[in-house]
Image (tube, rainbow, N blue to C red):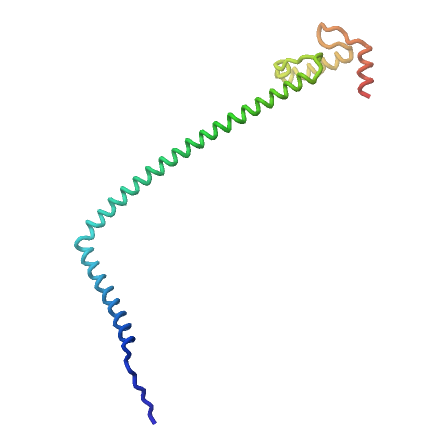
Length: 162
């Protein structure tokens, strides 16, 4: 026996099929209209869009340029402020240290001048100067024309070293 099925068309199924067909036909129509428009008026519209894009680009570049300039100005200002703050803090710390040293150390310390200490000695003269110091130490004198070191002072120095 042969079974045959009869299909009935439902009104909802026909409506869905017709709607999708209409969307397809509308997209084909839009493609044709777009092609005709592109051939006839597309080039002028394209030029207009390029002009608008150029104007927007130049405004954006100007705005970004001003923003960058403002950022650099702020950064330089902050750098100068930080630099002056560090300078004043270091100066204040140095002044405090000098004051503490001056108030806490005895007043009878020997005074040393920095330029004499910082004076460079050539290599050949350095050896000669070292030999002179060794000779002066043996003789008990400090420098040319200086008075000899007292013998008692040597014993005190030796006792303090032990």
